[in-house]
Structures are given as structure tokens and as C-alpha cells.
Image (cartoon, rainbow, N blue to C red; front, side, top):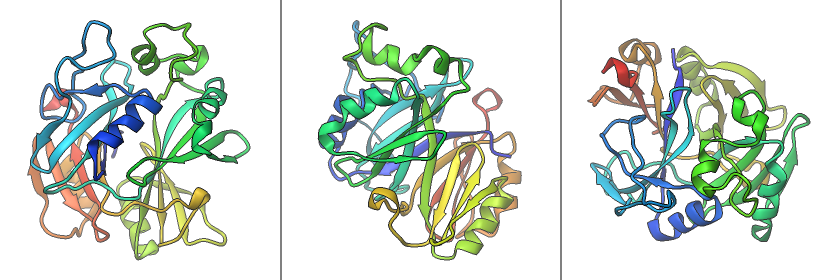
Length: 289
């Protein structure tokens, strides 16, 4: 049903400090939406490819925001747009949200070195390693060495890294981030939330033995937690803003029903709110709109 994560929206109090973290520490390059559609945003850069030619802080119905393209699809379009928003409306974006960037095994030690002054927590999952730091808004940012299947993983490089460094041999530049592979949502009724997301096509791959949590696999790994602290004292996000691509938005909304309120038409799809206040948008592929 769901083929890709197209947007993760997070709430921040101060865009300036959030931008400093994501652009200086993580090396992300802001994008300026060329069209009000997730997945069709174009980067308007200056000659050196690192700084936007115009102010990247734009505003939509929910408030001022800055957008970052994370990874890319086979056709070169952004895989996921990370949106940082200082909200004045809806959807606000998630607060204290634990989410994870993917990187390569070769790049992971460089990330540990680059962020060492932030005193990152580290955890081994056997087949991969993850570090955890906090952004200025209190989101727990994980970077995991899970990227092994993409062509970018073989070379240790990707489009994001090329934009960040402008020089493939510059090891002082930020290492690559190839995508967003995990988001954690806080829920009040784990069984009910699990049932809904399974109806949307997610499959259970793990359950907590001592913690009330479940991990589901889909276009990304989605963790559902009843209120608790996880690794690095991370928490599941509240009222997280997620947009998914699907060829059948109407069928997805019907499968996940009932929702809190009626579905809201948006450009290219439908928006709904689940029982825990998470905002889910289901979008048709850009080519089909």
C-alpha cells in the first residue's frame, strides 16, 4: 500500500538554532520548495552548491519552515523531505521525536568522530551500529550504519555527500546520510495502534520483552511505544507529521479507518489524524497527479 516515506515534519521552537545543528553539524543543505508537493522540491543553490541563493525559510499554512532533502530515488528526486517547522497552525510536526538517519558502515566512524563533542550514546545491534545525539529542539537523532544494499553504500558516497562537500575526497566534509530509516511514535493504546498500522500494510518484526513497544516494517521501520524512555533516554514523538506515497490514497484511508475526524483533501492526496494525534498524509506519486 505505502511505497515511500515522503515527509517527516518536526516542531522546533527556534529555526535558527535548529538550522545551525542540521546544516553545520549534519551538513544538510536546505531546499526551497519549487512546488507545494512533497517529493517535488527543488534545491535552489548558489554557485558553490552549498548555500541557498535565497532565504530557505518559507511559510505554508502551518507556519515558517525549512526543508531538507534526505537521500534520493532512482530517478534523482528526493526520497524524503525533512521539515523543521515553528508552527502557527496544523500540522505542527512532532515533538521530542526519536528518528534515525541511515549511513554506510564505512562512514559511521566518521560520524562518531564528527559528533564526538556532543557525547553521543552508542549501541550495537550486531549487524549495525547506531549513535544518538539530541538536536536543540530535543529530538533524538540516531545515525545508524544500516545502508548496505544501495549503490551508494558500495562507494561510500551518495548525492547528499556530494552536495555537502563538493569534493568526494574531502574527508573533513560531513559523511553521507542516505535516508531516514526509522521513526518512533508514542501511542496510548499499543494494541489499537498496531492494528491500525498493520491495516496500512506494515508488518510486525519485533516486540519488546520488557518494554511496551512494537517494531513494524514498511517503507521505513516504524516503532510504536507506549510512554517510556528508550536508548539514550529517547522518547516516541507526539503529533508527528508523516507523509507517505501510495498509488491508492483513497484505499489507504479506508483501510486505516476510523480516523479522528474526516479525511482532509490536500494537493495530491488525503490527510488524516490517528487516535494519538499523529498526522498522516497519503500522496499519489507526482507523475500521477
